[in-house]
Image (cartoon, rainbow, N blue to C red; front, side):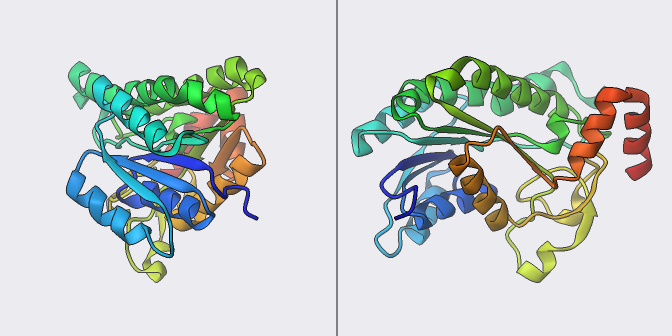
Length: 272
């Protein structure tokens, strides 16, 4: 029997891209899945497509930047299934802009979605995840480990997600909560598989054509297929890993940045 059989997984940003792939992976493994996103029509279509062969998929329209939506999302999940074993904080977006062209308002808006929305959802779900000794999955970015040029407020928001994830591990790990920080490179959009292996340089931006991506952490990599990353996330949860960095070779750059920021910056400029 699958480890996930009968468990309940909640995925924000679950109507498309990586969120949809993660939801499908959990459903295929036997979990009951709740998907949340802002646009009800797209959400309903995704749920109908995923709810095959007896899969239980519940769509709930919710905006993670609204506290009342988040509370309703978690309450309805518990009312429907009686428990919560996994929360995947996937909702978020990227940005393409020179840093001095990025206003304080731009920073505030992106921080509200990428960090504060994640904090809201985590706090609402935490009592139920602690009760089940479950899993919290925060979708970060390579840019949450190493900043890059031309992506505006995005690295600042994802560095904050990395720090928050570590705090949660330190404080709630001893109480039984597993926290997984996922730091991926570029995510391929929904397109034919032979196109998704195109070699690019960039950061994760699900739903953005690979050719439009700007430099991420300075690591030359191929666009990551969402289904493969989703499968890796499930395996990492089963092993209760602290981090999943894709591609793994990026860890070398992150180590160099800690040892010598000047050398790390040189590498990022050189590679991008």
